Amino acid sequence: MARLRQAALPLGVFIVFLAVWEGIIRGLEVPSYLVPAPSAVAGAFYRGFAEARYLDHALITAFQAVSGFIAGSLLGLAIGTFVVVFPMAERIVYPYIVALQTVPKVAVAPLIIVWFGFGIESKIVIVALVSLFPVLVNVIAGLKAVDQDRLDLMSALGASRWQIMRYLRLPNALPFVFAGLNTAIVFSVIGAIVGEFVGANKGIGFLILQANFALDIAAAFALFVVLSIMGVTLHATLQWLQRRIVFWSRAEEHFRA
Amino acid sequence: MAATGGEAALAIRGLGMVYRRGDAAVEAIAGLDLDVADREFVAIVGPSGCGKSTLLKLVTGLRQPTTGTITLHGRQVAGPRPDVGIVFQSPVLFPWRTVLDNVLLPADVLKLPRADYTPRARELLELVGLGGFEKMYPQELSGGMQQRAAIARALVHDAPLLLMDEPFGALDAMTREQMNLELQRIWAASRKTVVFITHSIAEAVFLADRIVVMSARPGRILEIITNPMPRLRSMEDTLSPEFGAMVHHVRGLLGGGGRGAAL
Image 1 (cartoon, rainbow over the protein chains, first blue to last red):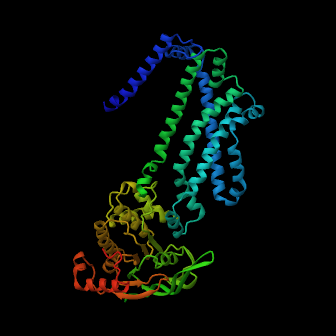
Image 2: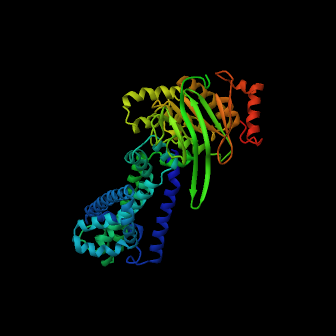
Image 3: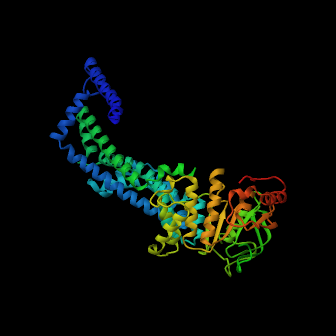
């Protein structure tokens, strides 16, 4: 009941917002190729799923985003761990990482389409590339940000490097890893759409381009809604995982104080 | 119960420690000799920067001394050893492990079988007054309870020597008094040798068989005072003239500053 009442105000504001938007479009007779009315967006949204196979395209985009995200994150975890375990590797590899990170991955997208083709492979590669860096940077930071007291405790017990990694550094890095994953999941949808913009014949990005060429702005808006539903779902799934896996991280600051 | 029983568990000879920072050298400890008997409770008090914590790092083997030797149970200390249990100023518990798993950390690191050590960990949690809290996470416990868990962890692998570095320094006065009573009881029940570092004179006098008073940098031993008060001591004993005289004497040695004199 309390939750219902909490939800009532934002929901009410949203409905008022839609009503005002609808009113302005109708009252001022704004042409639909500039800004569509919410009712037109809803119509396009419904027709999209009923006729234009939005679901198939959305699943393709989601698949590209998620598999690229997983590949990029695993790669980030592996490289990050390797670099921390072998400090020499960090000195050799890290300058390239920083240099690569400063290159906008979007700029490389056309090249990746050339290398990996028009299919989903090229999108997965682009997504993996944009997801890699936030995870990598956070893994390195997390594995290094260990309290000296905790290290002393492990050293005093005669723990090996591997034991310190397993019992202390890895769990200690998890909250950082999730901070990176949260950034990466947002990037992953962006990466998939960018890839589809550059060259594709499937996916939400492809549909958005089609809608723009046809000046079907209501459809474009409907596709934005599809994208935001996708983003929110992915983000919420990750949050759920985070709460289960790093249950201590919110209490950590309080705990250390 | 005092220095009379058994051979020296810990023997420190001519210990010196110099830290180098660029061209500057800081002498933290100079010419320190100390014997601690088996099952003895020794407290070390001194002003801030007297090398108390350096001494602890040397005894645990986390650092190597510049000069001198430390012999523990007949073997010279060359690195970290499993026959020492340590309690730090902060509990240093891992928030991703339950209280029981935190206590079992030394067993995991030393590759001791969990099946044998889990019952022991439960007994120790019972001993430190945390029975029933095994499945909770440290962040769900109060500061005093966390430090109790840390004490149980230091005892779990049955190391004969327990090193405590101002373990109750971060606790409020009431909890601290409580913990002193508890520690005395745990010490009597577990029959460990304890080296207890503190900046509280009253705490040192209350707990220890012998009180080692150290000077400011470089740390040297000013005097070792034997505390003849019988065990187990109660908080009422802290009101006795005998107790007051010892506290007064130690305070005099430390220059009358009375630093951290409150228990």
